[in-house]
Amino acid sequence: MTIQIITIDGPSGSGKGTLAAKLADHYGYHLLDSGALYRLLGLSLHKAELIEKLDDEDALQQSASIAEHLNIVFKTAEQGTQIFLDGEEVTQTIRTEHVGEYASRVAAIPVLRAALVARQHAFAQAPGLVADGRDMATSIFPQAQAKIYLTASAESRAQRRVNQLQGMGLDVKMNDILANIQARDKRDMERTVAPLKPAEDAYIIDSSELNINEVFHLMTEYIDLKLAD
Ligand code: DC
Image 1 (tube, rainbow, N blue to C red):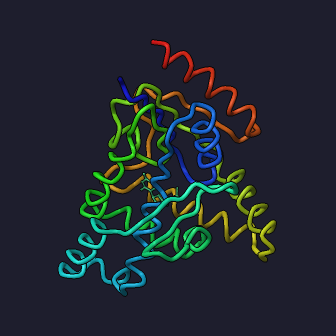
Image 2: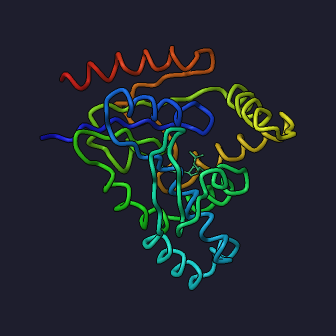
Image 3: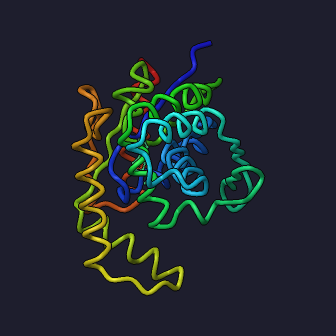
């Protein structure tokens, strides 16, 4: 039986995570949140005091070995997926701006990206997979039956992030968040290895003016056509 693969790539804050989870649920497929893997590796390297030393050859070798042996568990719970690193729950910790920053550094280094490839491929299991990331279609699963690139303007992504953080009771400034998003976009798009860009045959959706349900509808229409091919 062919394993169906749906890829959702795009910048952070485009709504990818929410939509990928909704699609996995709708189709009864597995879910790969590849950004979480980069975040987990960033957090591990921070804990091992290696994150600041990635330009040192020995530290980099050590980091690649940590990447290959990450002890991660994704547990499906009623309130969403719980994530454990070395037995400790880090579901919330990995979503902080700090860890996002570590992840973005890790993601720019070819040997560290390479060390996470096999782990990502292992998520492709019957009946199918929804893979959420930056290079799912261009690099990890080029054979995917349906490839979606979900984007939104930096301003609307920053506004969503501000709402989300304020909802968590945090005091945040729009300008700081926007600057962060723009810096991360630049790094993700300009890196030489697996830069963020749509695959040639991707269906591109701009969610700036759309709500989750509208985007979900566009996606399922496209995916249903592709899976029927
Ligand atoms: O989607 P996210 O914000 O959780 O991703 C965290 C970082 O990891 C972000 O800087 C982009 C990077 N990333 C990547 O380079 N490739 C992926 N497939 C997923 C995430």
